[in-house]
Structures are given as structure tokens and as C-alpha cells.
Image 1: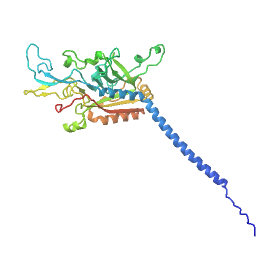
Image 2: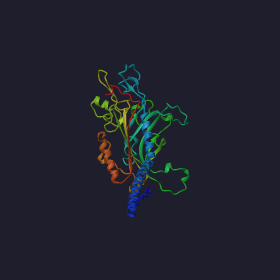
Image 3: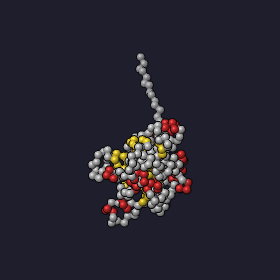
Image 4: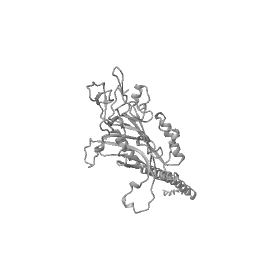
Length: 366
């Protein structure tokens, strides 16, 4: 019997060329993975940094929209006397009322900041729009007021230095003054909320916030270059009235004391011979307000200040009358963004449609 012969097995080893080729492929694969991870990291870091840059602006925008949504007029139905154009009966005689109409001692106003803030402002120093109204915010002098107490509120963009906003310990240091556009908030305590006294309701419709504007204003955020406010009705109401949603404020101006918001002053109601009252939007809040705010980052704001020598500039070019026609809102905003891009400024646009939950509309509004 023959012994079994041994069978030898030979394994073929990798050659040097094959090993080098494998290492090259592995290296290339690792480089692709590392490059992709680095790209993702830089993208996430960029988004985070941008969010941090505009965090103050975002908080300011949330403050505006939250406070604006709480605006109120507390309207009520009352007698209307044609002789006094109010709910006050003519003195000395017994006069029957002409009609019942809406009344309110409160007011909502929005429109070009230069018109609302007075003659000392310019389109360069106070660009865009402003708004003033009342809301149940509960702020008092001793900070312990009830939450339902009324407070006046207002928002606008103003240009200026930071001297009044510096802490006292910087007084002895020669630190350059910083000129910036800033969002400011008018926020007097509840003790100063009442906008009208006696018969001044029609004769002085805006003095209630002008008279203590400087003392009751605080800075909310820096590097806010524009605030736009567009009162509108809902799409359903626009369809029912066969008008554009912005018909209640075609030039962005809304005054709850005004009948049709066609003039900067107050229009009194009209009553025909049959006693029919034309009151329009008087003593009503706008159902919706489209709020748009444009903010720069600090680097862009510093570049802006250096280019314009720390002076306000009419960057909206009032000769072209931007943001005066609500139907041209999109075109005006696109034009502004184009200008900012040409200047290579880093900016962001915040925009939201804010429903005013205390607005009361019915078929007699229109």
C-alpha cells in the first residue's frame, strides 16, 4: 500500500504594485471624506456664526411682533353728535344724538417715521416707518403693576451716537464714539399711557407720544437700518371687498382716528341727511400688519460708518419715493437688497405677517 503523497498548497501574495495602488486608492478615499466633513463643518460654523451675529436683531424682531400683536383700542358704541363731531353733547341745549358710532380713547398709528416723530427728523436719520399704540403689558414705575394695565408702545429706527448708552465707568476713557442705526422702543409706564385728555382727541392726535418721546425711549438693538410696516386685511376680506389687501393703508399710513387713512391729519366722520354714518376704519385696528426689518452685522455696520464718515445717509433715495406705495413693496425691497449687495454688506431681512388679535371688523367697516 502506497503512502499518500503530500499535497502542497501555494498562495499567491500581493505584489508591491498592487499594495501601492491600494494605498493610493485608500488615501484618495480618506481625502474625499475629510474634505466633505470639513465642508460640512465650515457650513455649520458659518450658519452658527451668522445666527450669532443677528441674534440681537432676531430678538428685537420677536419683541416687535409679539408686542404689536397685543395692540388694542377697546372700542365701544356711543352717541355721535354732529355739532361737536364727537360723543360729547353740545353745551347749553338738549340735543338728540345724530347716530351711534364706534369710539375709543386709544389710538394706533403707523407710517413714515419722519411724519410721526416730528420736524427734527429726516429720511436719513429716521428711515422707514414707525408705529405707536397701546397694549395690556402691565409695566408701571414700581415694576409691580397688574398684567392687564395698558402701556403705550412705539418702534422706530434712529441714527445716532452711543454716548447716552455707555456705562459710567467708560467716562474716563477716550473711546471713539460709535455712530449706528438703532431700533428704539418707546415704553413709558402705565401711569403715562392715556393718550387723550378732554377734547384734545381730535385737535392733538399725536402729541401723546411726542411730548415724552426722548425720556421714555430705549435702544432695543443696534445695526437695524430699516423698519417697514404695512397694515393689511386678510385675503378673504380683500376678495369680499374686491380690493387689494393693502387698501386700508395704500401709502403705509394708518391712523385709527382717521376715517379713510388718506390724509396725515384726522378726518371726522360724515353723516348724511338720513343719518347714515360714514366711519370707515375709524377706531379700528388693522387686522394684519406685515412687519419687515433689515439688519446689518457689526462688520458691515462699521464699514458703512467709515464710508459715510459717521453721518446719516438717505440710502433709500427719497427721490425715487420707495416704501410709499404699498403695492410696490416687493419691488422696493428687492431694490434695497440690490443696493446692499452692491455695497458688499452682510445683511438679513426679517419679515412676518402679524395678526392683531384685538382687531374687530364687521360688514359696516367697508
